[in-house]
Image (cartoon, rainbow, N blue to C red; front, side, top):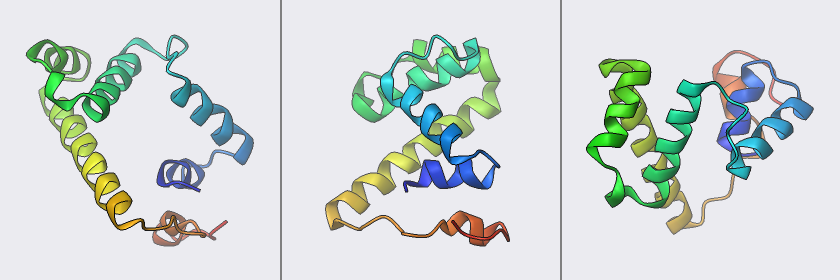
Length: 110
Protein backbone atom coordinates (compact mmCIF):
# COMPACT_ATOMS: atom_id res chain seq x y z
CA UNK A 1 0.00 0.00 0.00
CA UNK A 2 1.42 3.37 -1.00
CA UNK A 3 1.48 6.45 1.19
CA UNK A 4 -1.39 8.09 -0.67
CA UNK A 5 -3.57 5.07 -0.07
CA UNK A 6 -2.52 5.02 3.59
CA UNK A 7 -3.60 8.63 4.02
CA UNK A 8 -6.95 7.94 2.37
CA UNK A 9 -7.52 4.98 4.69
CA UNK A 10 -6.82 7.13 7.74
CA UNK A 11 -9.28 9.70 6.35
CA UNK A 12 -11.93 6.99 6.53
CA UNK A 13 -12.23 5.73 2.95
CA UNK A 14 -12.95 2.03 2.50
CA UNK A 15 -10.56 -0.12 0.45
CA UNK A 16 -12.97 -0.17 -2.52
CA UNK A 17 -13.24 3.64 -2.45
CA UNK A 18 -9.46 3.99 -2.24
CA UNK A 19 -8.97 1.70 -5.22
CA UNK A 20 -11.59 3.55 -7.28
CA UNK A 21 -10.14 6.98 -6.44
CA UNK A 22 -6.52 6.00 -7.09
CA UNK A 23 -7.50 4.50 -10.46
CA UNK A 24 -9.25 7.74 -11.42
CA UNK A 25 -6.24 9.78 -10.32
CA UNK A 26 -3.74 7.56 -12.14
CA UNK A 27 -5.86 7.50 -15.30
CA UNK A 28 -5.25 11.17 -16.02
CA UNK A 29 -8.89 11.95 -16.83
CA UNK A 30 -9.75 14.30 -13.99
CA UNK A 31 -12.89 15.72 -15.62
CA UNK A 32 -15.04 14.26 -12.82
CA UNK A 33 -13.26 16.31 -10.18
CA UNK A 34 -14.24 19.87 -9.17
CA UNK A 35 -12.46 22.66 -11.13
CA UNK A 36 -10.03 23.63 -8.36
CA UNK A 37 -9.00 20.01 -7.85
CA UNK A 38 -8.40 19.66 -11.59
CA UNK A 39 -6.07 22.67 -11.48
CA UNK A 40 -4.16 21.12 -8.57
CA UNK A 41 -3.96 17.69 -10.22
CA UNK A 42 -2.73 19.16 -13.52
CA UNK A 43 -0.12 21.21 -11.67
CA UNK A 44 1.04 18.23 -9.60
CA UNK A 45 1.32 16.05 -12.69
CA UNK A 46 3.38 18.66 -14.53
CA UNK A 47 5.51 19.28 -11.45
CA UNK A 48 6.28 15.56 -11.17
CA UNK A 49 6.81 14.79 -14.87
CA UNK A 50 8.21 18.05 -16.29
CA UNK A 51 9.30 20.28 -13.39
CA UNK A 52 11.31 22.62 -15.64
CA UNK A 53 8.15 23.26 -17.69
CA UNK A 54 6.17 24.68 -14.74
CA UNK A 55 5.40 28.26 -15.71
CA UNK A 56 4.13 31.46 -14.13
CA UNK A 57 0.78 30.67 -15.75
CA UNK A 58 0.66 27.30 -13.93
CA UNK A 59 1.39 28.99 -10.59
CA UNK A 60 -1.19 31.69 -11.31
CA UNK A 61 -3.77 28.96 -11.92
CA UNK A 62 -3.09 27.58 -8.44
CA UNK A 63 -3.23 31.05 -6.87
CA UNK A 64 -6.51 31.81 -8.64
CA UNK A 65 -8.02 28.51 -7.49
CA UNK A 66 -6.67 28.36 -3.93
CA UNK A 67 -5.26 31.75 -2.93
CA UNK A 68 -1.60 32.62 -2.51
CA UNK A 69 -0.86 30.85 0.78
CA UNK A 70 -2.59 27.59 -0.12
CA UNK A 71 -0.91 27.62 -3.56
CA UNK A 72 2.47 27.89 -1.84
CA UNK A 73 1.49 24.95 0.39
CA UNK A 74 0.56 22.86 -2.66
CA UNK A 75 3.78 23.69 -4.50
CA UNK A 76 5.94 22.98 -1.46
CA UNK A 77 4.19 19.73 -0.56
CA UNK A 78 4.30 18.46 -4.14
CA UNK A 79 8.00 19.29 -4.33
CA UNK A 80 8.69 17.51 -1.06
CA UNK A 81 6.73 14.41 -2.15
CA UNK A 82 8.61 14.26 -5.45
CA UNK A 83 11.92 14.62 -3.64
CA UNK A 84 11.10 11.87 -1.14
CA UNK A 85 9.91 9.54 -3.91
CA UNK A 86 13.15 10.00 -5.82
CA UNK A 87 15.26 9.36 -2.71
CA UNK A 88 13.24 6.24 -1.81
CA UNK A 89 13.44 4.98 -5.39
CA UNK A 90 17.20 5.57 -5.55
CA UNK A 91 17.74 3.54 -2.38
CA UNK A 92 15.08 1.01 -3.49
CA UNK A 93 13.24 1.28 -0.18
CA UNK A 94 10.25 -1.05 0.04
CA UNK A 95 6.83 0.30 0.98
CA UNK A 96 5.70 -0.32 4.53
CA UNK A 97 3.44 -3.33 5.03
CA UNK A 98 1.34 -1.60 7.70
CA UNK A 99 -0.33 1.77 7.56
CA UNK A 100 2.19 3.95 9.38
CA UNK A 101 -0.16 6.93 9.19
CA UNK A 102 -2.89 5.05 11.05
CA UNK A 103 -0.50 4.43 13.90
CA UNK A 104 0.42 8.13 14.04
CA UNK A 105 -3.27 9.09 13.95
CA UNK A 106 -4.00 6.73 16.84
CA UNK A 107 -5.99 4.31 14.69
CA UNK A 108 -5.56 0.59 14.24
CA UNK A 109 -3.29 -0.21 11.31
CA UNK A 110 -4.63 -2.26 8.37
